[in-house]
Image (cartoon, rainbow, N blue to C red; front, side, top):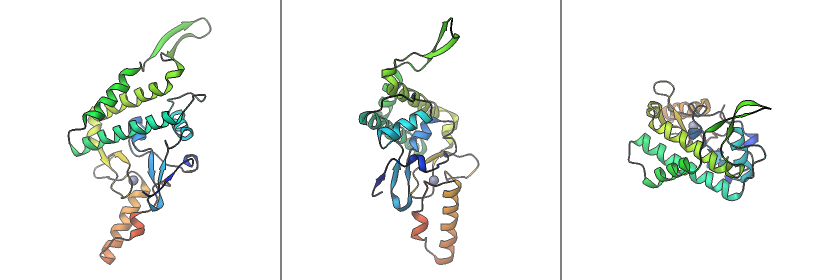
Length: 214
Ligand SMILES: [Zn+2]
């Protein structure tokens, strides 16, 4: 990883890893993509891309204000969530700092949308947090989802993509699947075939792009 690419998230179609369509926490854990040559495309790299990520996941309104420090807070929480996922996979005790960060975020603001009634709308639900707490609310929702993922039976299916240098996590959908995308699986198979023929793995196969996974 020798560089960070930003601002190109909209131009690269990346299907979610298995399970990331159901668990927001898994999707944010996978929000830094390893590209060709080991470069990283960070979908939370700038306030603009971080805001786009939150809007795409219905965690922020389109008019939300996103500052540098907001994007940094999201990246910090991603790191904690990745640490917790890694510890869960390796069956190791997770660092207390990561547990604390998740609990702090979950308890800082209410995440439930409250029941309201008015003549214009009748019964409806409305977020209970003021718009100034958009980021806190997003973090709380993400962390509640992380807690659910890590403690649910599905957490047993967590694994890291086996196609180096891909750094995405996934839920194993069937048996022994250990990669996050068709592209990563093809790459692993191609590398294995090459290794069988030559007794070595090709450097190109180890650094091919995951950002354009299909
Ligand atoms: Zn992968």
